[in-house]
Length: 340
Image (cartoon, rainbow, N blue to C red; front, side):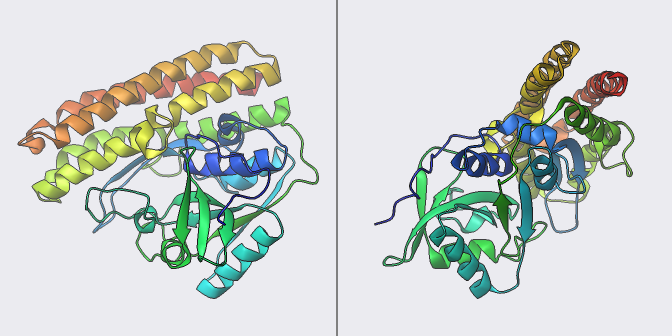
């Protein structure tokens, strides 16, 4: 029968990466919130990209080096190692060996190949999605998958292989998986919380390139009115709807382009550090999240209008106002973390 590993708890989560990490952490008796994993891993930022042949991308996740997963692990006493391979056979062998050893496995996949997703008949691919394999049945050739909702999903080995080996850009999964060692697990300290805040504030305020951080928000405001020059009406509608997805909870940001999750991280950070001023910053990021949600709904509505190109100038003011709010909020956080 296809059952999860004994003791595995299926959780409702917000973001695919931190949600998958939390599944693994809880299974290994290290009950740290998604919000803490996101924040302590310096996982919040903003970026705007528009690669040729791809829809524009506006996202609130940061890509620190070391990775968010590694940083969160280091600051919670967990050794996290990422693995990739070009061999589907090696990927499957490693997966089954870990499951046989009683450990759920965090996997990177292209959600477009997972049968439990419904894209209304449209072909859609996003290879940066992360899930947890928490059981398998060799008789039926199925793997049990935990995603962001509480229900578990049986997926056939061939479907999972396609999802893990997808070549679709910009985030081909490369059969990726992670291993965890909880032998030295612990809670993050105040100094680590402050350092994580600075590692997010710095790139938001002075990023290495203009596509990232507060300048990236302003660049998005500059570039979005030019979208009709690079795509037809159907492509434009999809670009607008896709932007809504990455801002809203449905896309796995926790809502408000990750700002709601970051706000809750700051509440936890205030408790760890004893600095109640972080609660004020938490309230500010909650408000910023509300403004991102309003913008997300604007993108959704614009995607349904008869002539969406005629509306694009409307979001310029909204994005520039968001850039101003973000700049002030990150400057304040940077001051607090530097003084502590």
